[in-house]
Length: 523
Image (cartoon, rainbow, N blue to C red; front, side, top):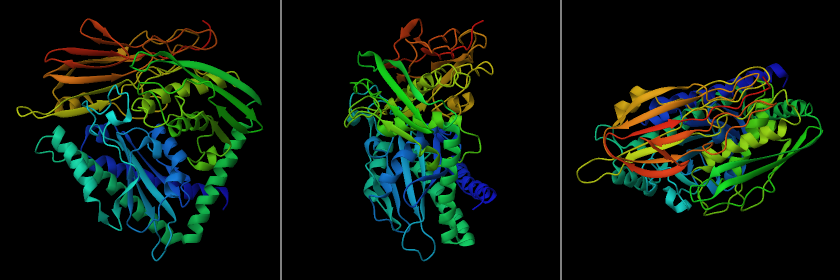
């Protein structure tokens, strides 16, 4: 295939992933999916190599790209199968992220030509605290664990698993009677997205033929590798190191080290995390697939915009991480915040190392936290329960070309904010303030972006969990510029630690001030 044919083919399969995303969003029930768009959709070849993805969540898609080949090799696939999983140690990220995988069969074919997959974040996966993002010490505390199992097997529905989801709905009562079963409704939306993806791909295979379709996927990945190597060849050969720290793990451990050594040799890259802290008691540990997602994201950002989002683009990159470390944790380490917080710090560490090699291309540290807020109320005989989860943006780091953006989601998250109207419509919460945190970006030749302020007033008692970072250690500036301001969490007049779980009463107010980005260049 020539470059034009590859481009057309790439656009067609990208469009399939986009349509899957539209179906998932429109068919879902929860604000977390339909408003925040905390989901991702992708296409893989018969060996589980990434071939296309929609512009969704980097931490979802990079981790799927890393783990998918191992997942699909374990099963004897048949038409109308659909696999479900959320196990972080068997291809997932953290338990709220549920992944559905379905094989693509051409009419009359006995073996799959590829796979479609989507991953969505569910605000209630049965953890002990509302929002299913607890300050946990073990995977067992984080909710329902789903090791890879068929949700559908030749169109037969796994009723036992459905009952487990129904029990979560019933026990937590996180919906009104008019809303129906929230978790099951969102799962049905995920199923529908995969079905639509398969339908569109069958149409494409029927039009082009199985051989041409398979050749197209192979050519696309080879093209991605060529573009990647062209970019990586521009980075000077050498070894570049950087160290940064997590604020804490919520269990008393602070200044937890993440160290990276990047070796560049003729367009080949090795990212070595040797020296990073061992896994910790708290839940900022992450499986290797999440660390890989952060690595892939950074190097993908350096590539031309027309580089296809496929496995070939990552072939020149090798990752080394010791088993049992913070970035390659072993079961049963808690991981709820590793996916959202440690992944963000990994981006900072990799960018910090690369700024030694290509300083004009690398920005200062962004706000460095997804600023996770989980809240809700456990149902009892007198009152129904509810679960809610959201992430907040902050300030992006400035770079050689200009100042950082303010109050945006950056790096490993790509979600929208929940509109104030939607939040107040669904839950007993009022937003008192939602504004830019002016002056929180680091000063420099180019200032870092400013964070934001979001203040919640609770209209009834609730349980709240905060999983945040960059409250103790500021986002760093570059080339002589100032750091961004650290974030601040407060309940009334009381300052709160980065990671905490607590009860609030009716009328109390929680204020989250997110960090600003680092500045770039001396004034």
